[in-house]
Image 1: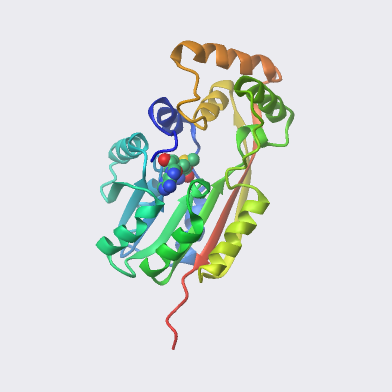
Image 2: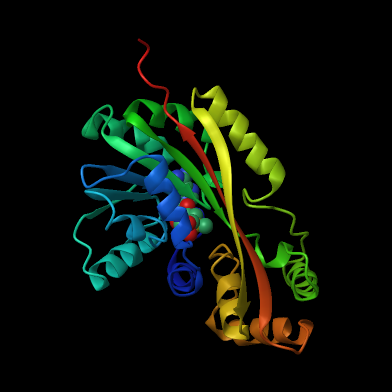
Length: 267
Ligand SMILES: C[S@@+](CC[C@H](N)C(=O)[O-])C[C@H]1O[C@@H](n2cnc3c(N)ncnc32)[C@H](O)[C@@H]1O
């Protein structure tokens, strides 16, 4: 059932995947009037990049993910931050209807999906989530930058060439981040009955040293393709040799949040 975010990949994810800018949480809190009465569901929560920062803004957060190692690390991070209102559930997007039976209709203020929708059957998920949302609530589909090897920069192009050579395949997947993906998700939200569908974007630049870049790469490789511990230094060296010599590597990060509001009661 899982898609490769286990073992060392989960460790790299927890350590090296960046979180989301605070503006994203502020905007969502404002848009959906989140309060201490509310519950937020994070589908594909991974190691908690969205669920954890929401915890202080609402009554409770629920993180749902099919990968036990990701959930374990999310729970550890929550414990480390003293977060007591997070529940971690092993399951996939297809388990949302069952979760809804447990929690009840209109029990959620917001459902978020961060950098994970491309693993899911999004049409079904949007339809399944809708009856669980309270009046004025909604859904947010968030992407957190372009894959490191798909960016418009010399180092990213060099990285892509190196990874394609190592894995012997073209790397073309945009992982839900391209404008075409965002348009497809917009149409799907509208088809599922969400209204006021709109995108907000936060952009900033970040500088990565080699270890951060390498950790980010390893966090995105399915665990069965990640070079084993004995080969990983060779893999790192191959990448280092392919990249321009001048660290740090500047990354332009574009965070896109697509929101849709659940339709209010018909009067
Ligand atoms: C790239 S990570 C995103 C983690 C986190 N949401 C973030 O924003 O960084 C993708 C996550 O989606 C999970 N996932 C994969 N297939 C899924 C599915 N069908 N339903 C729910 N989660 C899924 C993976 O286990 C992984 O933890």
